[in-house]
Length: 128
Image (cartoon, rainbow, N blue to C red; front, side, top):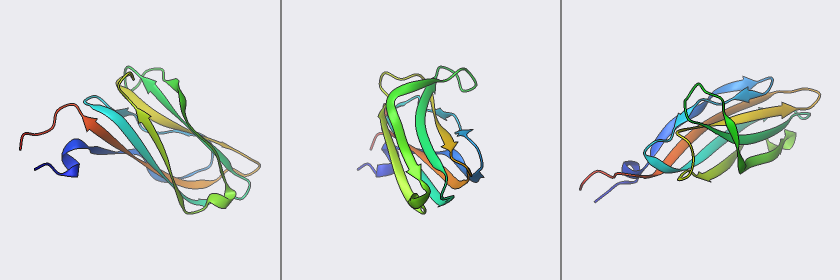
């Protein structure tokens, strides 16, 4: 019998922090997995702040990242305090590393934000 944890892996994709400007998330090594679900936690967010989130990919963790078409969340706004957002992506045709980019706009830019990446569809499950 397999457990849920045998086919998934969780990785911190953005350390909990107060964002006062746009920021890149941490590189997530997706090798060995074919899908990702980013769980984004938004705490207090300034009423003037708007956040857009997009996923990017790269062949190396420190290389030049490119946007993944359609992997976005637009318009997280000041009234979205204390909410969770999800961004899912199929990774089968993707490069080895993915990350999120958080773009903040507005007169006052401030949000308490964190993110966990849940990798799934592992290539190899443990034998039972």
